[in-house]
Image (cartoon, rainbow, N blue to C red; front, side, top):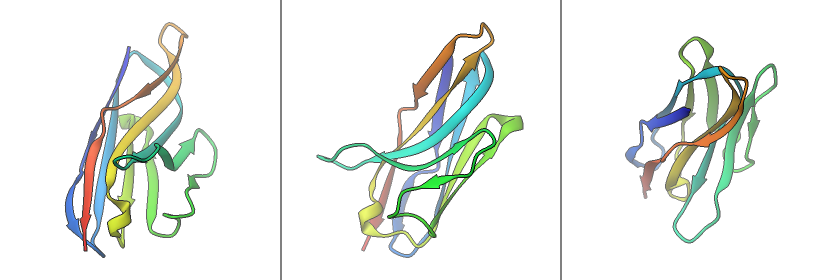
Length: 120
C-alpha cells in the first residue's frame, strides 16, 4: 500500500505565503505523477499543479506565477510553495500520486488534505 500525508496548511493573510508538503510512504517502486488539488466548500475538486517524471510542471491558470510545485525524489516528497495568496485560494488542498508498487501493481492514491485559509 501507498499512503500520502499532507502538511503545512494554516491561516494566513492575503499576500502571505505557505509551503505545503506531501510525503509518500509504503511499498513504492516508482512515482510517475504527483499533483496538488484543492476543493472549496460546495465546489468541485480542481487541479492546482502537477509534476510528472521527466515532464514540465503543469499549473492551473489561477495560480501560475504565484505557486511553485517541486519534488524531492530521494524523500518521495512533493512541495507546493504558495506566494501572494488570495482569499479565493482558501480550500482543502489534497495530494495525489500514482505509480507502481514494489509488486509492480499500479496505484493512484489521495491524501486526506490540509486546510488553507486566506483572510482578507
